[in-house]
Length: 312
Length: 186
Image 1: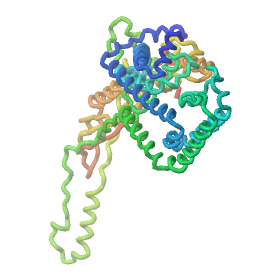
Image 2: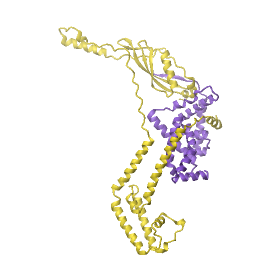
Image 3: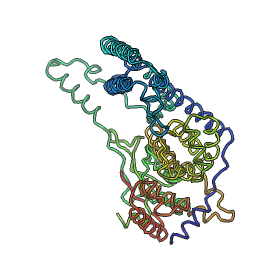
Image 4: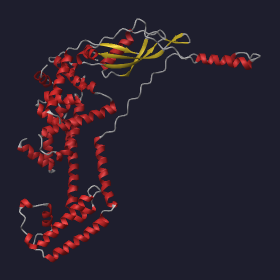
């Protein structure tokens, strides 16, 4: 099969029509996310646009150093601008406009400010800088910003991640229908012999040990088990896998009940194994106290396609 | 990328909700179609598309016009689909097989054979791994060139070609597959 044929094959894939409700829900969710993102961006912009002192106060730990540098740069630039006095006014063409120029325009610092008022402003800003460094950047203020950021993040997580559904309960095989052999104490029923101190406890111990002997597990008959047929659709679709079954065997060795303990991942294969086991199989039963008894038996099937088998 | 599209993206990036709504409406079908091809189930595709839309709303500002917007969107959907799949596998086990099997059940209608084979191919891609699947979907299903797929997948063009070669080889083996058998593991 070449590229062209594969492209044609994929072209035949039917895409089910999208649900209008799902589309509306998705668009609404996207708009909410977009709005939330914009609010965050605007908040960040507002923080940047406020005066250098406020910027210093609101600085987060990550950006504190950066903002300090920015602040110092602004101060230095303003100082230089004022020292040039009226010569700087109107010198800045549009192509040379920088954030510092914008700041100067915003505070009307490009007008014919006198050298004296300029220096006065610079001195004031220096005082502000000292206050910002000493008071404004305390951990208390940083924590306030941190708290608000944290709350937003948690809300976002709630939107995105729904709580996972509870895991399916583990399969617990039901107790067998047969009653366990009644336990009896030989020593209790027996008449007390003369030398009971030495002989009776020994007999009781032997009886107890014999009662606790584990049953012999069921066995696959010597002639083997007949294979279930591989579902034809599974073959076409390349379905393969291992299915584990729990079988409840009667005292005659027949399969009375079959349950899937772990799926192959393909219900079709699981069903084929279960049906075949119930219909055709017969085991050598479990033996307990030399008598056949009903019991559970676990078995795994590997449904495997020939090409995979040969390749393995 | 057309001027109109670029203007719309820029407007959305600058915070215009209307532009963003227009942008997402324009691309929703593309996102859904690709999500469906990836997931193979309508419900899952709708969930993945919704996640992709939310992610788009949050990260549109990160688009730098360095690649086609559609390529950027494909990458977004692939990431969301992978995240979704891994979260589903963690919490609920693999339910994909059940969904995929919904498709070929109408086995008697015309083209059913093709559909069954397509499902077989998709299953094979699933087995081969996500990188093969995403490559095949971009090239064969979305009609991209090897170079375009390489940009989206962030791999070399030769890697895309090699992956497609491997896919063709595996599909050839699949076509020659023999009837199956089973083994007992007591």
